[in-house]
Length: 570
Image (cartoon, rainbow, N blue to C red):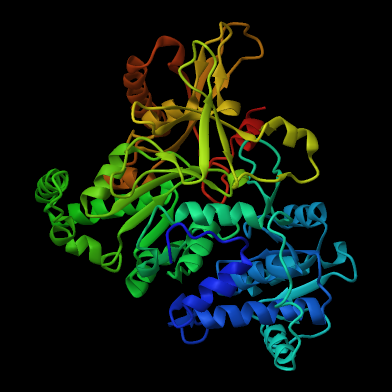
């Protein structure tokens, strides 16, 4: 494949790319019965998508209808998505972690008429039946046979193949409009109610084109799928990007199986969020410490990092044992969704891995910027990817401004929300709501989010993310959320406050059975925050500390739902 070859629609993946790579392995997925990874080749991917699409359109009359899909990461999830967008209708990916009432709300908001779900979600889906129309179509992924309550995914695929064998190629021959609304994605709502993002084929193929310039050896790579598929970041980078480029995808069984599954499938790329990388790094450091060779490893990593700057890369040789923990072939960590500590990036890279930091939003399909995997600009999210423009809407006197993005990857708009669409789409530019600036080399640095920004009464601006970054380095702290606090009976200035959760593993390892009291833990943290405050200008100093007993509410990409947490304060 030429790096600059463009796809017009996602259907081109089936008609061009999958045929090109027909004998290669596309997916590795655990067999439910044997508990072993089975291989699925590219030619079968095309066959199953065409068969399922034919069954949807010919047997169930699903044409131009909304089809929701919900469940854990799976090959059938991918087939559902592709069969829908390549002819059957509009796909509505749903977060499998949502409670029943929210799933019902999104089904109703999206006007969904068909629901494809994994068997693990069967009980939840059954609880919604009486609230959905009588003609609503249910398709269960792992059901053996269809009955009056729901259709079997596998049976529909077989019936679709039979129809195709008799000469029915109506679905296969369907033309796809690259600019037509075909994907409806609900944002995770970290700051407010979720919005429906409308995407078309052009948006996603533009991002596939951009990704082709990041990892030039893609057809020889194996991606490891651990983040939820309903999130555009995972679906684009791991699935669409891989299948369009001839790579393979190993599907993880779940977070607790990450290391085991990586050893089984030997991936070369892990698409991750910062907290996942941080947890992997913690486990690595703990394992190194237990060997008693911590000082030796640290010395070797410094030497290897220094030599690498001169083009001599011996990291993978020196740290072969560390590499073997992840299957032995891991080359790239592709990280997005939130900023990550520079220190962790340097540590990960010192062991012989390449780190790519990306930035984007659901509204940009999602990738907008990325660092060069061979020359990572640590502390930044890199430069605009191929085909995308990024600018800063900078007001005079401000050091950072709102990030603006333009390109074929920018969404069509928000579903049934013209006012909000007009607020963010102006003269071809998407106003992200994120704040940032460019360094001297043109790399983008994210400052924070406008809605999170704290503004004091005399107009000083405080970005919570900058302070959280410092607080999260305190070993006893797991996570933090910084916010502006104004007492109802006090008309003085805004107070900077912090909520934190504790790293229980650190506490256990450090203090053993003699756990400090709540008051002592508060004092330990407060002493560290006082040190941080001395590094900050006075108006940014943290004045209030709350230690949470429970976890922060989070999205499925593990970002804190600030809006929900602030509502608790009220």
